[in-house]
Length: 113
Length: 118
Image (cartoon, rainbow over all chains, first blue to last red; front, side, top):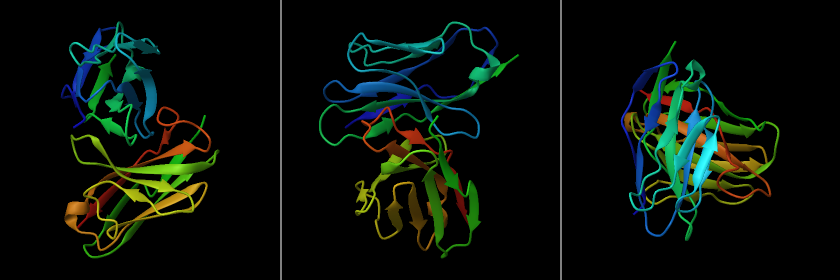
């Protein structure tokens, strides 16, 4: 079946540190991959996406590259800010059959000033 | 931007009672809404897809008689947990897909409802 595994949190970093949140997936075929972010008290928001191998999604300084050979979609940011504190979810959707989002368990990120 | 609200944000109820959770799209119409459930430190699991004016489509393993979904208008879907028990305690999240837009990256999520059943 389809599944997504994220690194366990919580993750705590200092401002301006480099961030990596690992995400690997299991799926048949070539799913589209997503990162969602949930800020405190708000709903999930789409952060970035990639729809095919070697695609790089980017937004707000965050990047993730679709790696088919390692079935990974790690989220990175070169210099985090306090305002990046949130919960991050990796997700996939199949390209065939009934479409539905399959989420990882979420990683809570806290950035200290 | 598009906003989806959920009410209540938190609810505590006694075992055996029913609880209704509302999901509203505040500034757009949504033909389709989704209901998810999230256990602590686990991923969001899709429970059902709610379509305005028709019956909801439930995921395998979700009891439709236990989790009643009503999508009576283009801006409101409700989830009623009937005869709630402690194992139903969870975080329930809805999302709404603007009418005429393509799934999945244009759906908007609500902030979630924390249900605790004593």
